[in-house]
Amino acid sequence: MGCLFCNIISGKTPSTKVFENEKVYAFKDINPQAPFHVLAVHKEHTKNIDELNENNSHIMSDLFLAINQIAKQENLDKGYRVIINNGPAAGQVIWHLHIHILAGKDDLGPMLLK
Ligand code: AMP
Ligand code: ZN
Image (tube, rainbow, N blue to C red; front, top):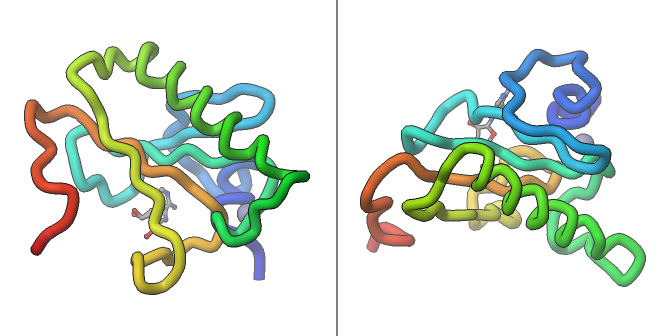
């Protein structure tokens, strides 16, 4: 049993790459929820926010700096939403910390369905 997103990072599982640097890989979500739906993952495997600590908190800054670059690269000048589903109640199904980047609409709608 491997990790799907580790396999995507290594190229074992195909993906549509949008951005890559030394630390972060970003690719198109296979089931897009907006015209632009990209997942940003750190190359260092961490399950989710619950596993963060003083020694690996660079994961979040590396991810957000990459998102800053992705937004410029992809001209997301109207704005974009970032989402982390953390744990079962939030609908996390892939246990490798990832940030959803959603854009491509003038109005992305409410944050949560009521
Ligand atoms: P989450 O519910 O936050 O764990 O999100 C997992 C996301 O991964 C979902 O939006 C899926 O559509 C996406 N996903 C699952 N498998 C793949 C894949 N092979 N390539 C790209 N995205 C995927
Ligand atoms: Zn992984």
